[in-house]
Image (cartoon, rainbow, N blue to C red; front, side, top):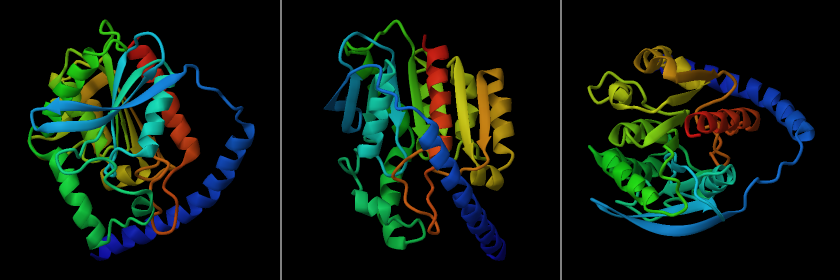
Length: 296
């Protein structure tokens, strides 16, 4: 307990220092970066997908014309909501047909949390955790993600907007990090690119640890963006990922960012913002490069 307290105090001090530096950095980036219009007009629809466990609600987003490689986006622990719909639109504008499923459909329709609930959420609050834990448990149940992955790939392959001669990509955030690996292992012949950003629980000592699925995964390239505090808590995880996936994997530690940095509506932690725009844009650049090289 004393070690946990010391660690939390050091994290708070680090967050305060980084907040000042990142505020300046974000201002410089915003001032210097030119406005970039989306390359393609996109169409968004709400769809439902039959799975072995029920009916999953999802956002289906694709360019207005043509057929394109399919993408599956696994959300973080707050599920399908406007911030991830916007992310899906941004990916689609790059020339991809994107499915953003509600990972909690077994327990609740999306959105599972309102914007206010997310903004005021505390992982230390027992009431907040009492709502979150059953939702996460529903997708982390044995074989749940694998069954969903098969259904989601089947959905994509049945759509005229998906170019089935191309491999499918999948990206995940926080809770979604392990889910992209389970997806790639469940449908190895269709998943060609995997991106995990501040993924939680990628490496453990359990026999079902996601990193142990490496031998089943045929994806050409994988990218793992690791948060600074995740790396500090588990410094050997990146080495085990590299050992498991070899030269297919690129693994980077974002030394100025905390767990959750890519998602705009993440709640404050100890009064400090988690979302880090400069590093989120860096991660976005890595994602686009991953898909262009592995799904072309």
